Length: 432
Image (cartoon, rainbow, N blue to C red; front, side):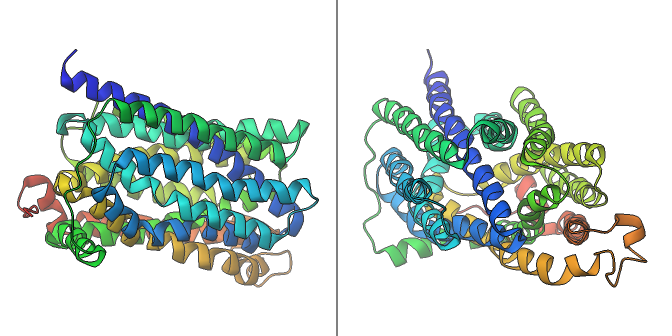
């Protein structure tokens, strides 16, 4: 077997562990979301937990990126997976002792997120370690299949399990899946030479080097900034889709609908894996985001299961094409030696939009948009004739606005010459 084939085989082993872990984390996210909505009935409580599950990992990612370039990336992945379980165990203990309070759930997800920060930069840099440049797009399809598992497999499974048990069972399963992930990472680590530490400078210096890898190319920097605008728009549907659906359906229906919707991501991820993209990455990125925004707007339009299923399916189908294009454009314009730091800083800047959306979405939904589209709300006689009225319709309007903003951002991105040059080789790559 050639080195190239062995590298892809090791990637598949590593990927299988991430697939199992993704299913487990999806079970926890679904179960805690339903639990919080049943306890509070507020979108803001769900948005707060989503924010705390995401923000610590994101803010710590630059430090994690330095560690990924200094130390054994596979060891960091194992530490991140195993230590993140402590937060889940804390929530489980609280639930076993009675009802878990909102602050206890917030504390648990924050602890889990802190340790999970070690995982992502090390994982992305490991993919570069294992694969050749020609295999990046193919691998991106597999990676997105694993990522889609939390939407494809977890919701339906969680919805069924919640009918026969409760959120505690979902947490137990998630904790067990982390063991599988650690085992697969350990197996891959044994097949690779030990990483020799190349960076001996200070953390601040290495962070600056990572930022230099991003900012030296105007196209890379602009692409990262535009991605933060996109994540701001996407953060609204990610946070608010569950409370919008739970306003007129139960958890079992929610799980089934989310699984059907996620088939879109699975279908296009498999397509990318089998027939990799080879050119026109900027055009594919812009088109997929533009169409995704329109699908978001349709998703928020009415409380209709068929419309939600169809629009949600095509929305999810656009994401792998966007992610694969982004991954290729960034990965091929950044030197491997600094990719751990670069990816962590890219993640920090590009995903600041998620943090802003998580902070705003719940408050806007509960305090502003929901009152507007109640039966006696200010917009009930105008927009309410189109969207309908009720407790979830204000959330739907907020998702519609976010979708239209995403389509507008896609148009702006496509017209930026510095981003187009990333594909044609007109932008400088880092040299050291």
